[in-house]
Image (tube, rainbow, N blue to C red; front, side, top):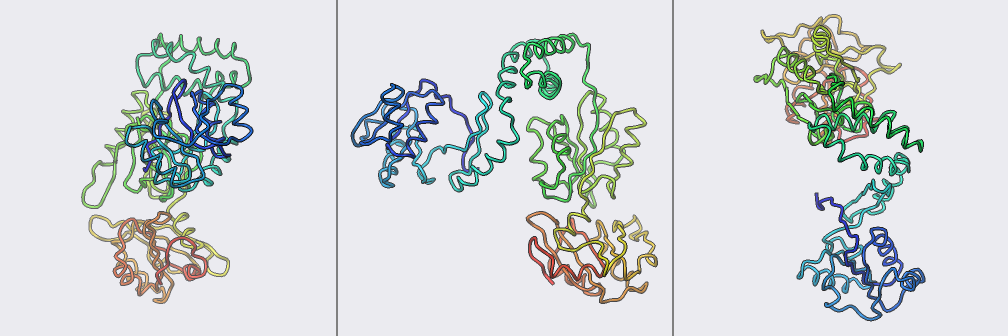
Length: 466
């Protein structure tokens, strides 16, 4: 992160803008919105700057910039047409500790001015660190459509009650639960509809109940499919529940970009099961879910891919149901769906495959795979093996031994949908050696069938090694 995001309170602070053109005008306009005391240094002014000067909103020194202009200032914006002068202003500001910004010159900026969505007192700022301001503005336009103008009214309403909620509810968790309900339910609806008196009545009634313990947050578990890796493949419901969770239990197949979406103050617990060292047994995980939900916490159980496809989601829900813990399930894009799509391999195709079969490649304790090999030998079927990297030699050997042609197209996809995706396309007979040559590591998905031959034409994400 090149810039630390921060909001400065500039009301009545002395700020300097050097330059009198259109760029300087835009910067002055932003500073005026922040109620700063603005001094302008410029020989000529735009009509709007001159109007603000005549109205007494800004002051101006009609001359060239000098070092003394920086004295007593909180920040300076260098917005002249001269790059060398802007850089000089930055350098001199650095010496005396004044925050400086040389417009359109990121190397000479101690701060940058972001694209802003103003729903005061709610303000959303978007920055590319000065590298792609047009992209920041494009994102601002997209977010503008998602944030109603009335959210500013809702923020002010919440601010009026903040101290009272803090004094009435001593627990930070209780306050957070209360606010999340207040800002997303009937209270918020009344505010957004312009009926703040009704909203205040509802607010006071609910706060009274909470402060006297008449309502206790009910814990629940959300079993959520985190998808194969790309965080943009999460459903909207999954994202909402992840960000509302008090505690998140996650597997090792959940990608770091997805975990980065978890609220900062939420407790994150790894329950990864990796070969050779299971950090928690399934029974331990079930008990932990029941215990945390029983404490009134909102628990998010994050599983890579989809929780009902080789994810033991059914086992965990059975334990929750027997303990009478409320739960809900949010399906995710499975590894088979996500990885095959990013590799350009359709799992079914009317010219190549009429069915698809998902198979676990996880070995039993005796080192064998409990797989009905004969039923898998069908040239019009696509086979998808989960967790099959270490079992790959056995998978390829047994399929050929039971009659599947050695030249059947086969693929191995490592960390599909992520920036580290590797796609290896080979024949069934050559897949093991190709995977060894590529030094594939887990998680790797194996796809076998005629549809794999389409990858050469249809793959669109990452590199293809054939």
